[in-house]
Image 1 (cartoon, one colour):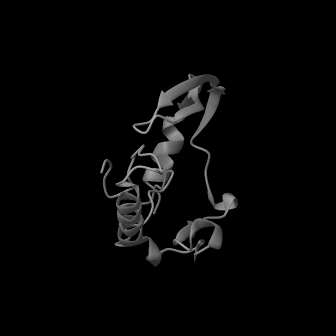
Image 2: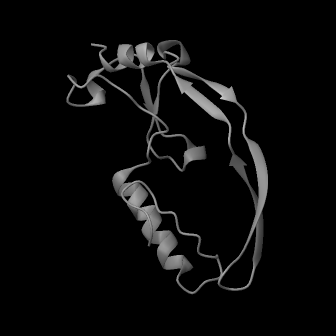
Length: 125
């Protein structure tokens, strides 16, 4: 299985003989380790995020009841901005079982971090 403690990146087809075992192993890995956050920054001083305030921890059904830290957008700080939208290119691959998968992938785009804002977040107490 590819990947690590934050989820696998298998591209195994659903009809593959090993699919069920790999799928179940991935679900168990998520149960044990949880999901990787999109981006979560916090001061290095507090031992666990649970010691803070201004957030809630929910287990929404749409996320298979996995714990999700909900931080109100009003508590956040913009640390950068998109400078360009990506374009999308069509890709194609043939699975081990001969199925043809077509999909799109983002290409390009841009994002610029504002160093002073990042520093403000990292040094927050």
